[in-house]
Length: 172
Image 1: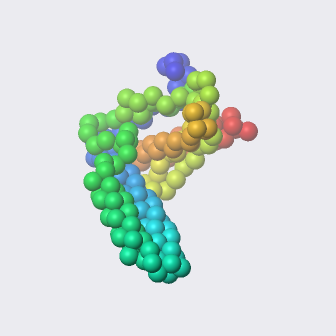
Image 2: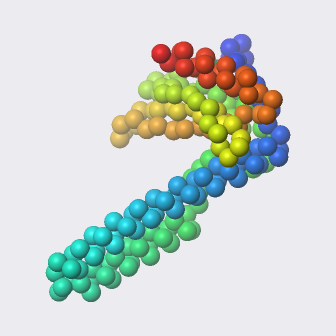
C-alpha cells in the first residue's frame, strides 16, 4: 500500500473509537451466546432421544449431556473474546486504499496471493455507521472469510458512500 493511492484517511477520536469497541464486543458476545444456546439445544436433543430410546443408558446419557453442557458453558464464560482490532485506547487512524486498509496499525490487504476482497458495504450499527470489508483468504481448510468493521466518522458519511461505490464498481 503506497500513500499515493489512498482513497481516504480517517481520524477517530478516543471517545468515538471506544464506543465502537464496546459495540463490537457486545455484538461478539451476543453471537457467542447464540452459538452456545444452539449447541446446548442439540446436546439436550441428542442425549434426550438416546435416553428415551434406550432406558438402560438413560442415566449415562443424562450425565454425559450435563457434563457437555457444563463444559461448553464454562468455556464460553472463561474464554477470552476473539482477537479483535477493536481495542479501546488512543486516537486511531484508518487508511483506506484500493489495495487494502490499515486500521489501528493492523494491515488488511486483498492483493496478496490467495486473498480477495469479496464485498464492501455500509452497515447501521446501533445508530452509528460502519464500513464493512469482507476479505477471504486461502487456508489449508479452504477459503476463510473475515469481516473488518470500521466506524465512519460523523462528518465522513459522504466519503464512505463514495468508497462503497468505488469498491462495488471494482468488484463487478
